[in-house]
Image (tube, rainbow, N blue to C red; front, side, top):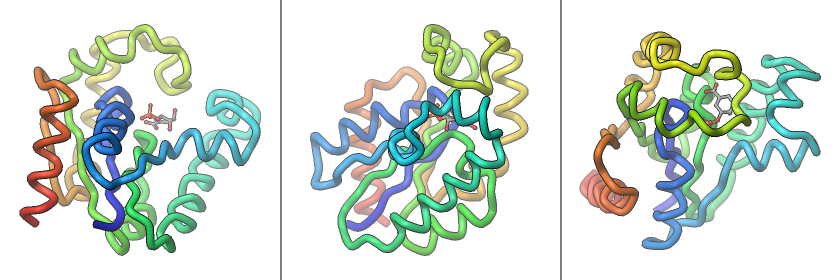
Length: 170
Ligand code: S3P
């Protein structure tokens, strides 16, 4: 047991899968974006707009440092940009296992197209923009991950089952 960090692009299923893990195992779900919003008393898009992306990125690192000290069993659904920073990857690897949920750009588009709380996608609602940003991030997700699960055409239950199998095999 311990900590599991779910990483991956926006819409890769981190929140949904962490909810199922909470239901089917002894891990308690933590939604990192929500923790940050609570601490700042602001929505993510307001933080980006009012204080800037760098400020938000520092809050992510601060949060990881804080959670790394716990003895509890948590599955942390990380924001999609968390694995882009080397320091964050180092913290996650030092205290838990990192699971990358991957998906095709078309799948991501279908999952995020009706939501409007993601500042990085505002004004870019198309598959090719998503593909471009995913391509830029792919290497970092890959090198951060201990385990990778392809989520296209799978139900959250199937993904959750696979994740638990892989975690126990490690
Ligand atoms: C971000 C992903 C978002 C949120 C913020 C930035 C990113 O989280 O942290 O909008 O850089 O990919 P989700 O992956 O949960 O949408």
